[in-house]
Image (cartoon, rainbow, N blue to C red):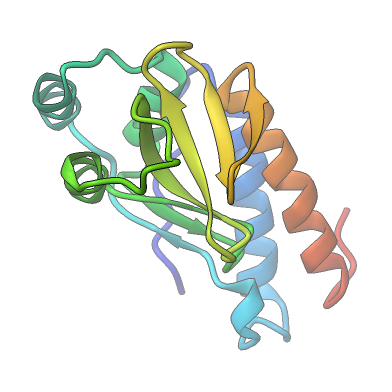
Length: 164
């Protein structure tokens, strides 16, 4: 059985409930041994941990990202659909030297698809961007990004089982 944190009553409640439902569906299926169905959740981040990251990076994240961290301080969603890094990893990556063509205002929050595409937060535009080899796709909110991930998760799960 996997650890699944309690879904908080916040701006992401609907999306997080859907992700938890899909994770439980995958875990309860006969196909769960399949690596592509892996879900992992960390315990929630504390307000102090979130505040410390913001102070270390001289940034104030959008409330929706902080709401995700209040649910899980890092997570793997259906193996390679998306991975959110924990706060220590976000902090560490933000302080590393970036490739010359990588936008300097981007903070890497995780991975998408597992092929080198990353989910970023733009300090300048205050939005979320998936970035891969110079190509960018902007999301107005973390909700928009999570809804796209939920579609990907459903597509993956439907290859192994029937989902409602």
